[in-house]
Image (cartoon, rainbow, N blue to C red; front, side):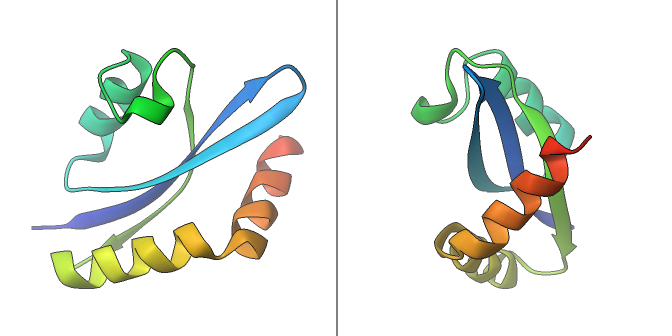
Length: 85
C-alpha cells in the first residue's frame, strides 16, 4: 500500500494558509477537507493540493510528515511556488 504526505493550500484575504497531513488515499482525503469533514483546522475553506510525496511504509510517511510540519522554510518555499501559479 502507498502512503502519502501532502501539503494543501487555501487562499483567504490575500493570505495563504497551509496544512500538512498524511493519508493512504489522497483524492478521498482532499475531498474530505473541502467538504469540511477533514481536520478541524481545515474546515470551512477551499483547499488545493500544492505538494505530495508517496512512501512505501506508513512509519516512513509519518516521520516525513512530522519533518515537513516542522520545516517552515520548506513550507514557505512550496507556498511561494504555489503563489506564482
